Amino acid sequence: MISSRTLLHTLIAVFLSLGVGILLGGTGGHSWLEQREGVLLDNLEQRMDQLSQEQDRLRKDLQGREENLERLRGQNRILLREAVKGRLKDRLVLVFGGSDREARRLGEAIRAAGGAIARPSAFPSLPDRFDAIVLLPDSAENPQMIRDVRMSYSGPVLIQRRGEETSRPVFGMDEDRSFSLPGPYTGESLQTFEWIQLIQDATNRGKEASS
Image 1 (tube, one colour):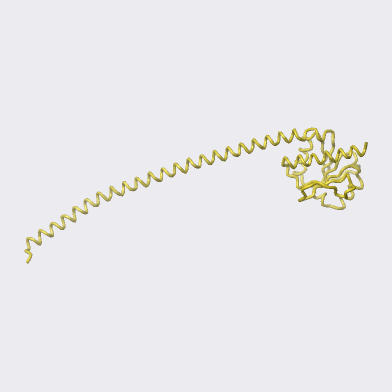
Image 2 (spheres, one colour):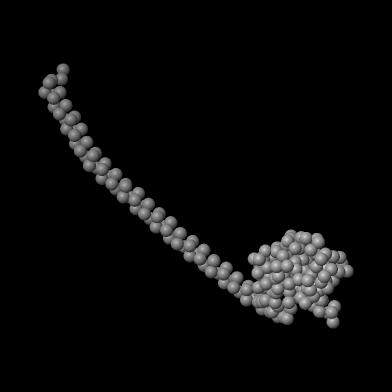
């Protein structure tokens, strides 16, 4: 049989062990949590730095691409000016119909090629002073307007056709003075060169026919 003294000593030892364990466990656990928290914070800060550096790299890369694209656009504009230079020298082109924005873009291209444009609010009663007439929508989509122009004007007529990719006569294969322009006109370099070349060919035919 266990004596009271032995039982008392055992209980004291158990409680002392529990106290020491709680004390050591509390102090060590708190230190471990602080250490673990510090590691997590360090990893998070490192990851944030990496993301920030990656974002800066992507921003610089995008900026470089945009600058390169703008440089190429500038080169295209220079090449286009050289390609169309003088092609419409001394040519007066009537641009009728369409939006002001589209007509302004086309006018800039015609002037870059050495020509001049007129854009009246109403179709002139004596249009033969023009070397060519360009009909933009909505005039190009008005059959009556096209017939009236054809009846009153003896020079080349260029009509914008939406969705068409090639130029061809509008009023029949034997009608040399009427042409289609692939539209809509956007001002893009290759399209601009094509339009200027078509206007040049049309006005050259008109000059040859009148001479």
